Image 1 (cartoon, rainbow, N blue to C red):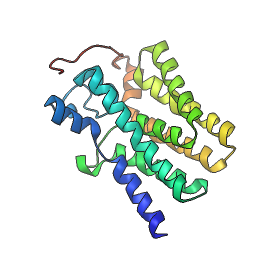
Image 2: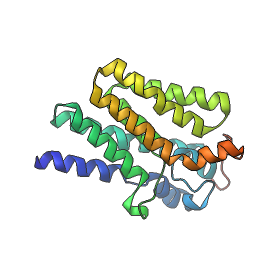
Image 3: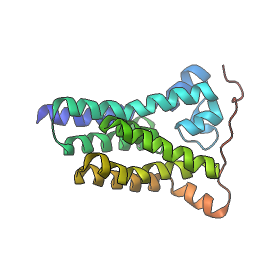
Amino acid sequence: MIVFGALLIAAFLIGSIPFGYLIGRFFYHTDIRAQGSGNIGAMNAMRSLGKRGAVAVLILDALKGFVPVVLMERFFSGDLGVVLAALLAVVGHCYSPWLGFKGGKGVATSVGALFGIAWPLGLIAIGGWVVGAALTRYSSVGSMLAVLIAIPALWFFTQSPVLTVYGVLIAGLIAYAHRENIERLRAGTENRIRLGKAAGSP
């Protein structure tokens, strides 16, 4: 139980590492929270830091979900531990204690956790994001579609009610994190995806 508890604490702490903020500060000499949407995730990194910064943030944020799941699977059998580790990693990202319990929206971290559970799940989630974003040019739509499509995919690949419930919980958390985006979508003021190099990018 001590090891189990330590892994859960580690999952939250790993998830709470604000890579978007750290990369912006140390490599681009900028506070990503003061740029664009103010979010520390990959899409705002694209707007604020450019493509290389965004790719680095995306990969590192995904690893925050992947690593805790793999560690839990390594030391404990059963789906409940995996679900708790994945949830805590995503919650850590969304509510990082290092940033005053603020953070990102958890999409990359939740997709990383899906890769840890079963790699096809991660690919399906990415496919959902690509389809949603390509059709609408809104990253927020792609993000919400990615986690929604993961729910039936979790059941199809795992046949686990516990893991499927995790998909439902994550979809709800991601929707809540995107509540302002949803309001902007309704108002027609949501920012569309624009690819390009940020000013001052190395």
